Length: 107
Image (tube, rainbow, N blue to C red; front, side):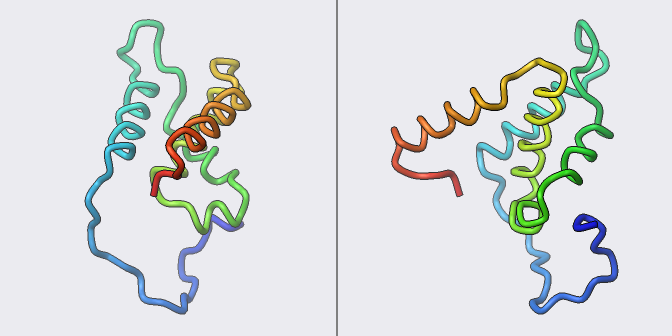
């Protein structure tokens, strides 16, 4: 399993330095807390276990190459789409529109 990398050797040293959290990463974190909040009216829309399952279900290349919050975001979209709360294709279309409008992709 691609996500089970404990004890695996790597060619490059692991970067342990903290990076500045980008605004979109803060939004993803806030979204996760909102979606998993058991105290929210109507209960949570998803669980942390579902978030983990969604991350572990990512294609191997995505799992290896995407950053922490990008994995969270893709997992949240997948789980919410499974539950019928969002339309993943509609989100993808809107993301493509934003890239065309702004001429770049978020780092």
